[in-house]
Length: 207
Length: 253
Image (cartoon, rainbow over all chains, first blue to last red):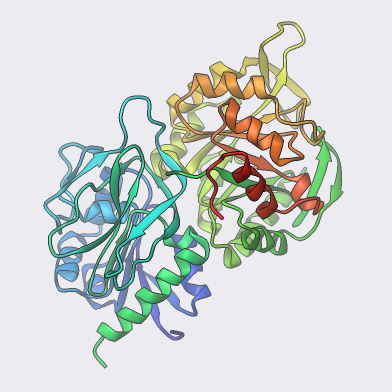
């Protein structure tokens, strides 16, 4: 997959270096994407993110990327959303009432666990994928989250996990992949998933 | 189910790993890039780098070390030591740290915790606390800073609670009394702090066996950190994890 350039959306101050390093290990170059036009044009796009839902939407809104991201994912262009990136694809989040997400899915992001549960969930937890998932596999991945998606959006294939109740570990459709865990920090399990995404993305790209 | 994290820690000075006893008598223990890669292969869940450079010049070397480790490491990386301001934190996050540890600077100016959390998120902020048993009050621990040379009089449980309120997403709790000694973690300290906060507590200082780690996890630690036993090659991360699983702990193998 060498020679491929990954566009990375700047959603905050953290996480970019780890994402970039993971793709460099797979032989890819990377660059920041900071305009709506950049979002439309990037062959492969990554929407990373750590921090709060409101801060993430503020960063995306300030760069005027919201509708370009929505159109890109609706159009099935190769896109990877990580952690907060997945959450931003939803309509709203319990974390930041009143803030509109990108709205690819009509769902709301919910707070995990219940009374007395330690949050954030920090560490390696299961990813359970069905045999029909083209990219997702079962194993352990690294999570750092307090909020999550509970239901699989219509038309998507999901892998699930459990932290005091089930939630969505990742979803995929065509060459769009959105992970609640951090594939770039999930050792061999994560890098093999990134590799499968690169292969699938390349298949989806016009020659 | 969330598994227990086993975290090798590397104290770094001038680009090399060093290890001491009770924060002193530092000796060379290898190259951080090679070591981090080895620990990942062995099944480490996360890596911690603590910059113990004595000088500000050493601090910029630490940024280079972080960038070099990040290049080959696909595990979460926490970096601490000498983080005084938001811009120090941003520099490390930009170099490839996933979380930054704040210690002495936060004792002097607790707002720095909130400043970093507001900008990068609570999950990026680890409050590192060095705790020593109080000489005057039995059953109490006080926060020590400047490599243990300064006793602050601050109650460790109070400080942990305040740090979490200010936005720390995790507590890295090192027992000054046990550090590098190998007699096991300070279990009473762990129990007290884990009972005081709702954020994960990482046990540090004193481990030389899987048994010590098992005891720490039972005492309330969410994750366990160790340095000497891994650097010395006495045991590998995988062996520790196999032993912990035998003892009934959930680990990723």
